[in-house]
Length: 290
Image (cartoon, rainbow, N blue to C red; front, side, top):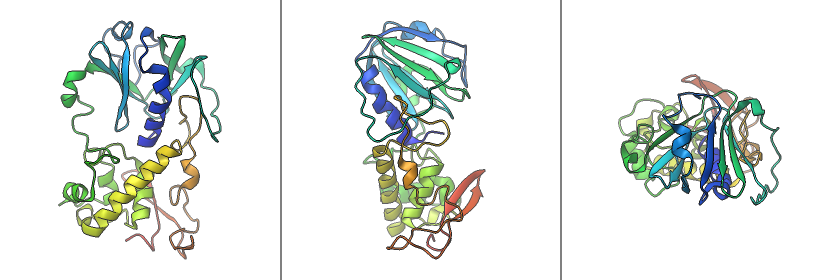
């Protein structure tokens, strides 16, 4: 599932296509994705302007001139593509994903200036919702979310307090969106490795210097992943089809049995190990993470 850096990369790719443009027409090619589309979905979108495109955790939020917000979640395999002549793209060193199968084009937005934004989702685990923007504090998907990992609200003191008294493993606690918003399995593994904290350590013991190290590691992993365009696993790609490159920088994720990079010289006598926590693979260095 795309995590925060992937969703932020998609948001940035969609901004020139959507922000400030009126939706000339909106079409849903089926009645539902993971959930049914909102009532009068196409009608409520058609004719309104996209004032701003925001992100909260793993959700994209299109602020509409109608006073509503279109919430979009990519699920497991959702992706947007842009068709237009006047959209400037700078793919840099990225390679490109295979073209999306049009049989899975489920939502098509035609915007001013001849711009088309298409949502494609083979597995249909994504979803879209419309809500009154003024009611966002109580919106069911957003109300309980913790701070963004790159925000001023996320800090070592906050993290220590949020984890206080928790007996669950720190890996599990960091995946709780009420603690910190947008983190997923990949980046939690990487952050715990950078902080030299065992994924099985009791969450309530993370305080003081450990909390400082972990908060800093989370921030650095997320910022570097965003700069690299996210990570490409299975279906993920940005709106221009570009694949993110952060996966080439993984220190532990997916590297079971390989030599570690923990020491200053990039070596480690231990091998990267894999364990399963709550049904998800956790990769770590059994020697250096405590």
